[in-house]
Picture (cartoon, one colour):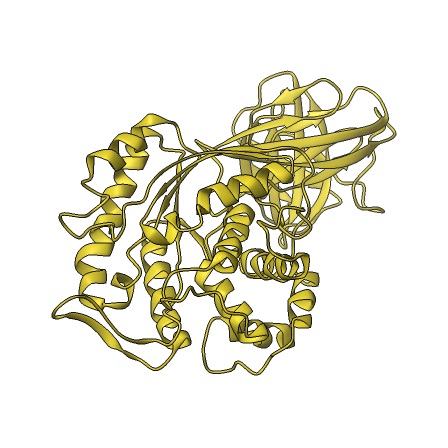
Length: 442
């Protein structure tokens, strides 16, 4: 793993570009975490950019890839030549057409592409790109808080050089493509991180293909993309927007199958191999839990992240919306326990099978200790027989709702008055391991 980490970092920096065979693309693809998702997906995306988006009809290429993969992309666009995110008077942030298009649909994604030089010119990056991005982000979220702003990370000029957007607003003198790409990548990453937004890492995929194959992706002006460059960009956007690999899609846009294959693999390698770096799925909660069974009673440890609501299905027709419910099964059997964790926009789910045996038989979790709670006495003290140590006692109502957490010292704990009825309990040791669990009937 450490060796792979060192290899993959080469595609973010110009310091090491010794790999030179298309076979590297295939090897990286094998290391991509993730799965193929065969079910069709429908997405709506708005592209706000300029000629880098307009040339070769990038949104149309993405839609074609989606169609051939069994998915669908409904898209809109506004891509006037030379347009920026924040430089007046050619700024999407204040353009009536762009703002109207943002309001046209409840878009899944709104793609923002800055003018190709501005991110590499620090003064314009800070005074135009950053505030323009913030303004557009606010506009998008005001229409639909669940729309995702997706930054289109573009590529450097073929030979680098000094880039002047207007006189007196120029970049450093970049020695080559890679040095300019470093500057662009840093700028887009900085802006996207500040807004917790996704990135389509097109320029980084360009670096990978150019560095490993020598393929020319620039048009004759050494700035705009040729068809290969646009197709590679489309593969990256397909992977990001649909969360699926582009490799294997039959649509080639007229390129040779071998060329399309190389570009698809590069897009997938950069997108999925570095998904966290590009903030992909950073707004989706992660559902996770640990089930523990004792005598037909299920105890849940909720390890979900980024969620504010939970829905449990215990597999026997019973459900709960508690954070960590306790559930009593009425019969033995195998049950799929499913947790769906959600935030205000998105959900994630996970399922663990549990096998329930010996319903009604009081069996301690860890043999041979037969730990039994006695009490509470008149002072409110519960004594845990056969447990002389320290730990924590959890009490639950018959519905599985936690009603109290009490520290245990030398096998005793002080609890408030327990009403008559059935109560569930769980005892954990000092290292948070479950020592015993069961029921109390008063």
